Image (cartoon, rainbow, N blue to C red; front, side, top):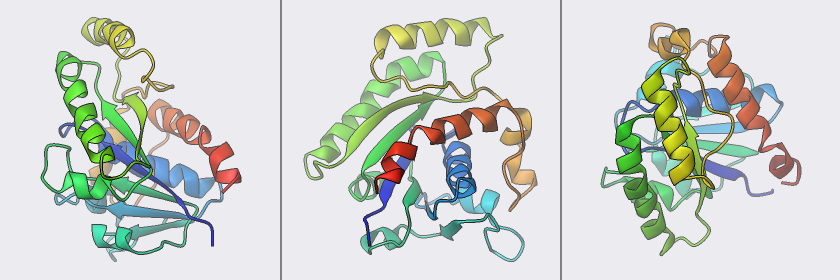
Length: 211
């Protein structure tokens, strides 16, 4: 059995769209015909509140949902594993990162991200000391409002400060995707945000095809 690709969507704090993006990414992989394992490794278990229906099941084709990080200790039968870890400031975050291959940092186009992304990247670099396979894949800007002059200015500054790390596409704000908790167990709502995350998922197809 080939080893799955294990991806973590991480952030320095809550509110960056991390969980919503991780879930939509897992859904997109499943829609493409891949076998997917989703690991809700955050103590807050926000992902479970969004993805599990009234029967406690995730009904998405191709996606198996796990509510504990302990499953990462064992071989996993999947093409790709998507992990929603604790915020990088949490003491348990380092252990979770040690189990994955690639980390995608989710952030907002705001002044806080300009200040805190370097600290988040430093946590990942420290983790690599004991887990050399870990790779920071880049920064994914989420919930972006192009019509907000502050966000537009911050995105320009982020391009200047983190040019080589910014990932495409930027994920636009989508209100009904943000309101996902009102529809637990449903697939991600259609809209520009979902479309952007599906496009982002396609970037991994060459890796998954060679797995």
